[in-house]
Length: 500
Image (cartoon, rainbow, N blue to C red; front, side):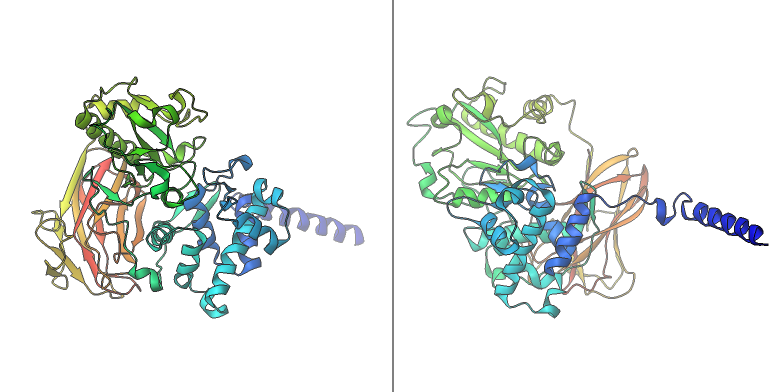
C-alpha cells in the first residue's frame, strides 16, 4: 500500500510538472528583461508611475545606455543623468540613492534607480502627495523639470514629448508601454509657447524658430561677407528637446542652424543662415549645420520621416545658395577637416538620403491625404458639428464633438494600394478647449489599434501617430473617436497615410 501510494504521488507530481510547463503556460512565458525589471523596481521604490518613468527614458535615449558613454550635453545611461557645468543630476542621483556615480553612469539598473529618485524629488518639491502621485497627468511639471530646460517653452516641449509617447505607446529593448488616456496637467506651462506648433522660421518656412544663446554662435552677414557652400550633417547624441535646450545654454559654446526630430521630422531653426553656428570647426564659416535627433550607434532614431524632412531642408538650402547636391558639398561631421566626431556614423543611410535630396529615389512614396470635406471619404454622425473657428485648420473647416462613453467615431476612408507598412499622420487645430486625450483608431491588418493625442497642443501641423501594417483595399482606415475620458471637444480634421 505504501509503495502504491508512493507511485501515485510520484505520478501526480509528474502530471503536475507537465501541466506547469505546457507551452503558453505562465511557467514557460518569457521572463521580463533585466531592463523591464529595473523599471519595475525603481518605480516601486520611489513611488513613480512605471509607464511614466519608461516614457521619460524612451524620450531621452530609446532605452539605450550607450555603454556608459556620455551624450553631447554630458548625460549618462538610459535615464540621461547629466553631469556638466550647469546641470548635476548624476550627482543628485548619487546623493539620493547612495549609489556610486560610476555605477550610475554604466549600470542600467542603477541608472534607472537614479532617474526615478530624481524624478520623485521633483514631485516632492511640487508637493505631490501619495494620492496625486497616482495620477500620471499630475506629474507633468516634474517631468518638465527633469528635462533641465533653459526656458519654459523648451521645458514644455520636453514634457509634451514624454506625454505623447504615453498616448501612442511604444516598445524598445524588451520594455513595452501601452497607449493610454492621460490628461496632462500642465499648470503654469500651459502659458508657455507651444513649440510643437511650427511658428515660421526666418529662413525655412517649414521650421519653427527657437534662437540659440547669442554666445553660442557668431553674428555675420553671409552670403555678402562669405559664401555658403557646404551642408554638414550631424547627429545630436541626445534628444530633440535636450539639444534645443543645450544650444540655449550659455555654457555649451556650440550650436547648429537646424535640429530635426526623429518621430515626425519636425524642424527647429536655432541660428540664422546668415550667421555662423559653431558646429563644424574649420567648416563653420562656409557651412550650414543640420543636427538630427538620436545617437550614432542606434539606427532606430533615423526614421523615414526624419530622412525625408531633412532631405527637403537640404534641397531647399542647396537651391537657395547654389550648393551642388553631391557628397562633396553635403558632408558628414566626420568628414570635416580637423573634426574629431564620428557622426552621422555607420547607421546613417547616405544612399537613401542623397536620393531624397536629389529627387532620384525612384519616385515619391505613395501617400494620400483625406480631409473631413473629401467627397466620399469621410463619414460622421450628426453629433459632429462643423467649425471654422481655428486658423490652424486643414482646409475649409473641421468637425468636433463632445466626448461620450459610446461608439460614435468619425471615419476616414482610403484605398490602400497594397499590404504593407504605412505611416499615419493627423492634422488638427489646437485649442485649450479641445480634447486632452483624443482617441484615433487605426484599422490595422492585425486589428484595431488606438492611440491618444493631446489636441490642446501641437496643432496646425502633421503629427505622426505611428507606423502600422495595413491591408490592401478601399476601407475605413482611421477614425477619431469620442469615447474618451479626456476633457474637451474631440476634433476630426484631416489624416495623411504614407507608405514607408
